[in-house]
Length: 316
Image 1 (cartoon, rainbow, N blue to C red):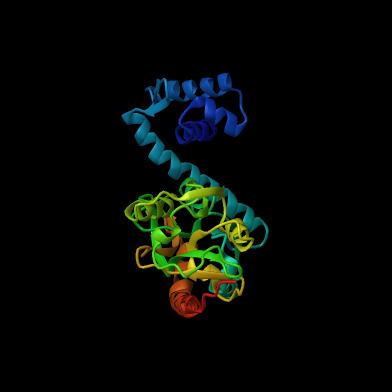
Image 2: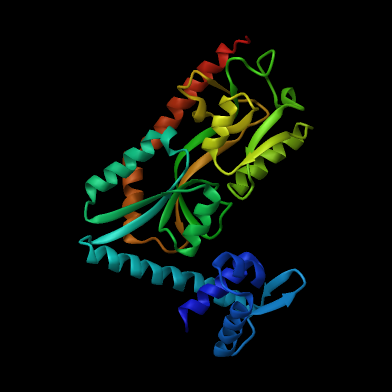
């Protein structure tokens, strides 16, 4: 079976149509259509049904898709590890790390300890948002990731919890946009909000929306961004508010976080890998994270700091 045709097939399924897949992988649409047809002819069955919206997997196509993900990922891993061995390493491990890792120093601590304990394993790091990390892990582009998800959100991943962080409304401290300290989401009715795009962290996006609905308000979104660091920077300019992990305001005199009773959201930092495919290198990383037990203790310490700072709201 031609691995290139399998990759084309996966792209078509992931993008939902041959047209969209052709644009993404930079191939002419007729050529991509022909590759899919050759794959179907080679296997001897139809894999995709076409309709006005795009493509839908047949039962045979569903089986091939699930197994093709594993086959392509395994082949990519073999190629990466072969290259690592050629460069003098015993093995390699590629992981994604959340874009707010600079505000969670213990992540760097875990990485440093892993490098120190296993110098023969080449470690490649990629700063990525949670949504793209999930896709990259499932597709085999990276071996594992440190990302914000809930275990039930991603059925194709196995996870290990390494830290929990309280979500809060973050705003610029001086001068603030409110004339008094907020006590509920209703205090932000009509207020300008900056938020991430849904494809960045779908699970968190939907949970926040539910709490807005429960509070009976529709958020006034003035800007959407793809990453937390950009959002944090815009909040610091006074453009608006954002709902983010409260740790992002810890130790910063220009920002303040309000943890509200009607916003009881905790985001979990997970070490995640493809379901049922825990490699020896990922297992070693899990052991380092568990033995250190540092991420969870730091989360508790930073939450305490934020709670203390929330009592010092001053309007100027």
